[in-house]
Image (cartoon, rainbow, N blue to C red):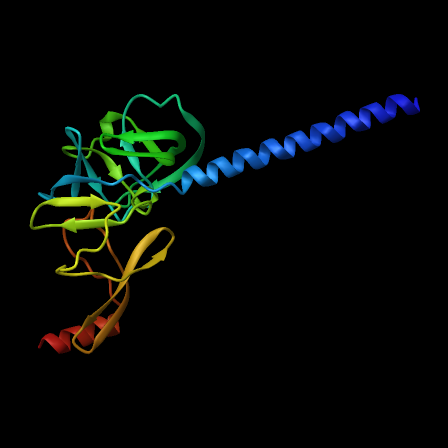
Length: 216
């Protein structure tokens, strides 16, 4: 009995060590791949309604106001690692329930990365002429330079020597916010939303009144 118990303990011990080693390897592989930035590429813009990026022959909304990437497809990739349920609210405050997938390999035209999250909807959810939304879960994996004059957007770019405008921002809930100054007024936490076609400001009553007085 003692010899049998010793063998079982030894098997359990070596099994535990092997399990820990495999777990460390999987976690390390995930962390290394998840931190791999998007490879450098340049592509064209279509800003008829909102900022859109062309990948191969299709357009996707480049949306800093969305914290999850949405791809319109009726086919769930076979390389998904796992998925979780998530409640999503769109720009019109419509709420729906969907699944967010973690993909081992993610490729849209020239844009390619590993271990990327995205929501996959039916093609019935197409956004006008766009085939999906690139949210901040993929945008924040590269440095981006947006050239509105040349209608180009460059991933993993360095800051040009001469640029028209650079916006400093804060990150909250994986979304980008900036502070705004109008005259003597200072407004904080304005959402930077490249997927929206106009500027809207939701201000407190005292700020609205101050702004009204300022403009008068």
